[in-house]
Image (cartoon, rainbow over all chains, first blue to last red; front, top):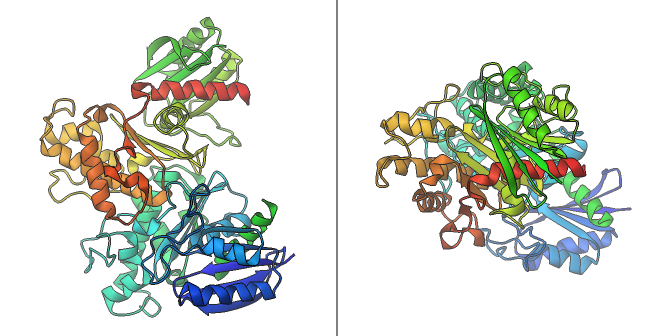
Length: 292
Length: 292
């Protein structure tokens, strides 16, 4: 059985095929130009590999309400040409295979929950910190959709007085997580990329503060059994201990759980699947589509 | 069939019995003194009514992990005498009936979800704003427990510059929801009870701001299909429109959902069951205990 996995992003569409063991067999990348150009390229790719089903993890917002007339559409994205694009119906119609769609971060959360850092638990928050910030969520063994789907990057935080750009850089919200702590926010604030800022730069104190505030609010809101932090910014792994320490400081002993002992070392963690959470999650969605 | 419902609170224990239609047939209130005194009173009450099963909605923190050795214990409460109290094992052992336990706010959320303001949906956030602030949560049709259980009152907020007490009054956290917006926080800040503060008092601008921040963070974190606000402070119903307006201002059009149109009038709402969410939820837990 060959499964197709589509990681639909705002700059590139990563198409992969994998086997029943979630092993990736092949991969192709197409730039995200327009639906008219890019969708046929993806269809050709998956057709040539004879996939049995398809899983899609996509940028959003996306309509995940199965009872909606626009189920499986990318909806109100500011990305030119891609607003109101029926990506799931297009792909399923052309390929004639079962398909399942979710957000890119929900796909990653599903992978970490199924075979990664949160394996064996009943809940898991996956957050990617990169060009943007997004969160995928599994609660009591279910992917969370709800009214729309989580948009964790827009959580309102409490900017530090020492922050030279306390309003952040989100065009919608002053002082939201993405506006304060995404890769571009770091670079705009300090004039240097998160990739190269030295480990002792004040940027990391602020970054750890904001990610710790997010962890605290996630813990008190829905009590995830594991918080997985991925994405480009988290490749700077020296901030994991900083985030853990500050999360515990902010919680101040209020939440009693053995998971928070020993510095929360095994509670706030990098992805078990490294940079492969997204593709693995899309393959799991494909498996689920075939079983459904 | 007669069901027992125990609403276990820090000042009083409300014991009720109800029928299969969730109609309340009788009620008795015992002050929360010590387990040695109070638990036998409750056992006598329920024994005398010949209940078939018992549902408990309790103050917390409470251990809700069925695989834990302390499942059904009130754990680290600062309430004198009640730390580490096996309330579920005691009640079940003495009454010899099936019993189910959850937090008081999860019980209320379950009631609003089953027969109240969120009936027919798949998710619901219930928040009580009174002596304390707590949140109960249903996501994808399941009550949320997770690592511990939600402790929504301790969400970190962004205090307003115009707040005369911006740190709030929580002994654990500066500027958390409960510390800023509970009934006692209002009274400490303004020297007057939330019950009597005039509708045009600045207290309500601050209160609406903090509850709106909480609503925004809930919406972006787990996307509930309905937010139900109950508890004593919300009896001052003039703040509902203020909270809705401020929530939409803070979201700034980022979340596109028909539920947020028309001023979110039917999205952020009072309890459909008025002050009976808690007891109704405990009765539903009792029904579930019998069915399980």
